[in-house]
Amino acid sequence: MITVFVEPDNETFTFEKHNTVLMLQKRLGLRVNDALIIRGDRLLTPDDRLEDGDEIRIRKVTSTG
Amino acid sequence: MKCRKCKAPAEVPLPSHNTAFCRDCFAAYFTGQVEKAIRRHGLIKPGERVLVALSGGKDSLSLMLELSRLGYDVTGLHVDLGIPVSSAAARNKVEAFCRLHGLKLRVIELEKEGLPIPDVKRYINRPVCSACGKIKRHWFNRIALEEDFQVLATGHNLDDEVARLFANTLRWDAGYLSDQGPCLQAENGFARKVKPLCRLTEFETGCYAFLNGIEIHTAPCPYSGGASFTGHKRLWADLEHMSPGQKIAFYDGFLKRGRPAFARQEQEKGDPLAPCEVCKSPTSTGICGVCRLKIAVTERRAADPERQAK
Image: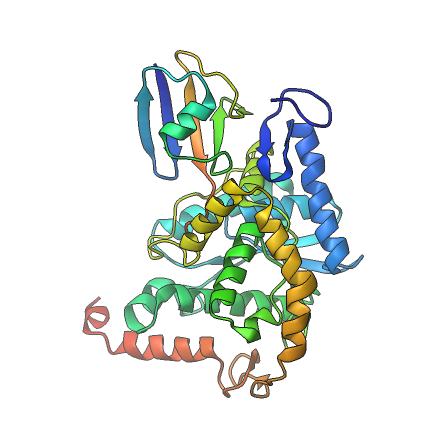
């Protein structure tokens, strides 16, 4: 199970399985530079693999006013 | 993904540059882009005092930290808009950031100035974002001039600049196209305004803020309903995705070849400016727009039966 928290929407999703960050981004309709993909204190790149139990923070970067 | 420079595991993928960086090499890249903008466009000269407009978002706080690390004499200016919950949260982030990094900060409270944004929204019949922007620009310029800052720096990034340029181009607004860019020289009672992040995208400033542990204010303004250029930014994100590098090419090309042509063509002169009769800010109308807003809000607030009952 992978838990994903999206900022600034403050939404939480859980997914059974995603192999890579790129698959997660596609599932959420995000392009590579639409959001920071954060695991712990590191930023992830699209080819990084996701593991069961991962808690991922997605921080969208477009200013909303 | 490996860092292009040192081959360590990358953290920042940048398709626009067909590259990726680890955090250390990204920091060097970020600094290089800021220095390039400052050098190429003559944004800040040695020894000048720089007032940095701080909203609490990723762009302004990243700009403040980077300019201070580059050795510039920076002071932050935060305008507390007086919006319940939202303004206190943004101000707390700015104050904590400046405390943590030992940076100077000035705060203007619109409540104390008699012009809190909730009252502007309630009593003034015009889009609140337009009035709020006007009030913030007024205070940034006023403090810069009154307190002897030579430069006013804002955190506008490449995405902001491209979206604005795109909007101006859609309207063929020759006036705006004649002077849009990273540096607006001081004249007629206005301080020099500069945008040192103009070569960096929102994604890059977001990465910089995260990698430097900057706590940012992320909640959107409750009054904004989405920033005016958000739709244009989405269009440009699509273009950039299909053809990486389009944004910087569009912006750089405009600065090199478009703006000079509009600047030559734009002969029209506006009305002459004189100091505002109330606050001394430059205006063409006797009393400046912000002082007129303040007068209108004060009058309507005094006549509001709900306020009188309190």
